[in-house]
Length: 481
Image (cartoon, rainbow, N blue to C red):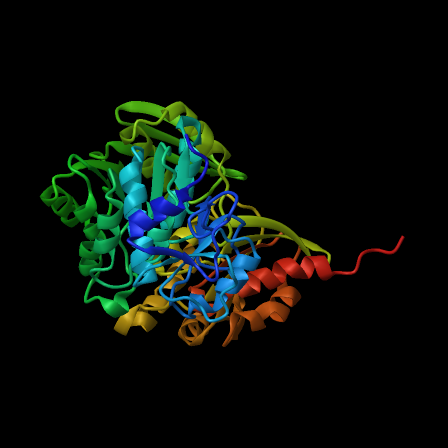
């Protein structure tokens, strides 16, 4: 199988674009035009993470990518996909010119999909999308060549970027698909055309843009519109909107596989037990009773694992190797990663759940503390896009905090202030407008053996506080010898 991802002519055919280069004379000895003599190993939309041999795609998102084409070539780009030649274009560097770069990227994605005969799996849900995607990647490693994005590329440019990088010889492709509004999933799932679609859960998220959680369920069910004939829908049987999801999946001709605690679940959780370093799980997997362990805590992670195992079986993967892969899997940054830190001489555990937040993922994050010893500290940032009842949804976290035996709570943001003020005095740590400003108060409050969990929506910048706490350990004075 060829090593390159795209040749110049393949990329031109996929996009309908024009190959050219500024001031590119024909090589007299080899009779080669520079604009035609390239191949690429990958794709990039960001010069900060571009690797030599990538096609640089000059998207017009928050900034115009055409302003960074020269920088891309300086960093070793194989070619640049553009809609116009940049004014500072270096000589003899190949361009692929298309009317619209996002359209060109989608052309590459469709061509990559059509030339690959592997099993394509799409994942969506109100919480757990990225964790499930990462768990799938780990579970399928023993069954063949697996392709997935290294980051949470789940939007209108992230999905085609991931698909355009799908190797021709991949055995499995995994695609995370997100949405904020109705209709956003449809074009992405129709581009991917998955064999298998997973919905992790449906809960109150992005309610600012929906009239009800049922409407969110309908928007998530759009993922079935792209399923191939005979495709499989993997659904959460315990979810209150299961019947709606199942009806939508059936309308698209999908075969339904169910996971959960429900007695009718095909992949049924029988027993979950949190232990110090993770969890012990017993489940029925398509009629077979199996016990396995995870290096993760929280019953929601067990549910994610069941969805993953259902997808492994449905895609023809090796279940035993998948179980082995899951048992080695560790949570990723922002989604449950754990760090042992020494803060001002006190050893603590920091759980990083800072990537994003809604009521369902908050509940799941707090459940991950089960089985852990030590005083529990929660650092919570605002949950955004919750609509008219945003304040009530924030206040609803109080009983969850108490049920999770949280000892001390630090809050950031205007919405979290209401929650903070309703907490008992002995639970109140500190409140601040910005999460980053809580660092000193947290450092003053922590004791040896504490477990700190940080959770908030992206815009709350809770992740910046996590970064600062992790960096604080490295700045502490070392004992003099």
